[in-house]
Amino acid sequence: AIIGDEHIILRRQNGQWTVHGTPWPGSNFAVSPGGVPLSRVYLIHHDRCNRAYRQPASANFSDLLAQTFLPRWNGDALCAVLSRVGDLAQECTQKLGFVNTPEVIEYVKSFDSHTG
Image 1 (cartoon, rainbow, N blue to C red):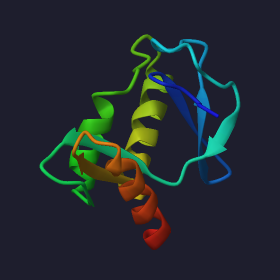
Image 2: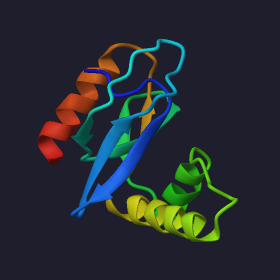
Image 3: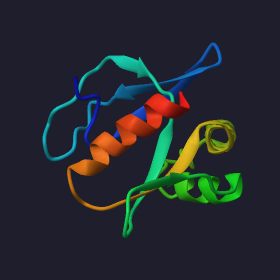
């Protein structure tokens, strides 16, 4: 099932991150309203080889913030979103440099199976 191809919602419930589809699909219009557990976030960029690596939480925060919809009209909601982005940046976020070939999918699957 495809959860979303552009816009997703991340929720933290009972200490577990989940990812959910939204009613605002991207170009493929293929989304699911359901949610699934989230084990890791990869911040992707083109590279000369496929490699996953850790970077400082502050860098993760900046990268995540650039992709986050911020509710600027509501101070309490804005603070809550920023706090959750901070939590996500520290807990399960890594950088993923990739070569734009199908092999990156097997690389990520292999990496996840070895790191849990």
